[in-house]
Length: 254
Image 1 (tube, rainbow, N blue to C red):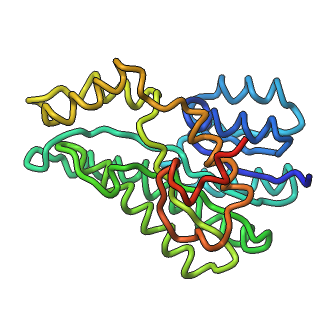
Image 2 (cartoon, rainbow, N blue to C red):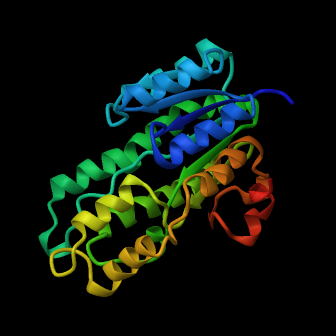
């Protein structure tokens, strides 16, 4: 097996950390990006020859070029990019929306992703590489007070479509990981209280999934996302899938 080089954002916890571990255990090389340094250093200590990292905020757009340059300088190529970082807040009804808060969320969830994709395209074109976006069911459905987050994820789905049209040598796929046991779900339970933000029905559904142990483990969608970054077929390019959809069955196989 030939080792590939993958950039993973939001790599310090949750799905991103699960993705990184899968790639590293499969002997691939990674450039990890996150604002939190300690988890990245821990992976570097465990896999010294396979890991480079950038502890940085991707809303500072120059960091997109730093991440791609680090991949090329360290490993000589770039085969895939996993855009996994993002934020949930602000959770507010539209009538109470702060335009500045929405702009900050779009900087985190969309424009930073666009900057990284832009920098990576020439290298991925050369390697016939892949881009995987961690999307959300909120991109195609609506929850009260989720308009900022959901619309930003819908924008990522559209970005995947446009990469597929403009860059036929690059496979770009958007994946919803479902409801995953991560810090974002914890934030939702703590801040999404009905009557203030979410509807009572929607909030109860998320709370029930947690209490009944029905949240996905990060490793489940993480495996699918990691494998797509290595070997996504081009007929998937430009499309959005749930991680457990029939179309992705082969990427869930052990």
